Image (tube, rainbow over the protein chains, first blue to last red):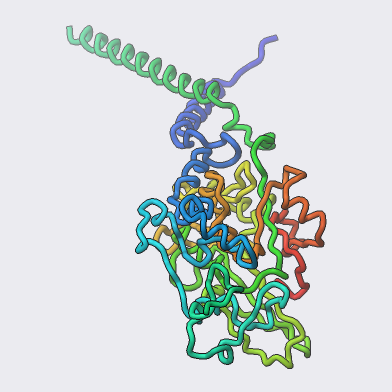
Length: 154
Length: 262
């Protein structure tokens, strides 16, 4: 027995085939090359995200020249503080070696940004200073060496 | 004569149409075939095995060590060129002060960059502490799930990143993040967030906030390496993620987290 296929069905099937093909062709050109390489995203975007320029060099870069500071700092409480915590982003200075390219902060406000007294700080974590009482009018670095703050200058 | 010319014209049209159809079908077939052969992965995204050779990053923030100096937020802005205008932060610090009467005072002036001044008088304070906030780099993050174009994702290293070229700036992710860690970049007009300094991690450097933290309150490490300092810390301390009830799979663990923290 022969099935009767209405003449509009093959035509409809052809139309479907054309539309699906058109969709797949369009999709080929619209989906980015690396999409789906690792997941539902553009794989090349990982490379884009690794591109931005550095500003902070990391303290190992500092110690290549400033070995003496590393030795000083290593002796006590400021040993875990990396150079760029106080001196700011240092990559420019690492490249140029110019003193102008690095911060040399001083002053009561700057040291106070960590050492100011606040109930939120644990007493065991940091020595806290009441800036309104402790040697008012003097700069911290007049008495303390910032790399060895436990040693008083004479 | 005229009849034969018209038949010839029809023949011409028919043969050129046949030619056109043939070429079109061949080209379309070739494109589809090429797509198919190149990578069937494009069609089957789900459940890729994760690359075991790469680290899978986790973060620990020790609230007991944080002194609220704001160096992390400051360094983050400088390293990542985050807009300096207030209230665009990839990381910021909040101070919680629990008063004796049980009320909680939460402040974060300029994200903590300029430091904190305690406004609650000492005798009213029951306890006070600082909470640094940043992207939790969730493994089941709501922000990546709502992205309609696949412009944000968790990288194989476990870092939640944004594809700036692909982002359409629709802000779905900004409202989806339960930790408020995303914003729309005012110049680029696309979503922006903490990348755990992905560009630094790839070069073997620590993220800027961790590089500049004076007390070591922030740590990052490889969760896959069971001998890493981070895993050791997690084993030895009672840590908690923010909003565990939301099941976001956050990989930012807080040590000594108080129940007041939201």
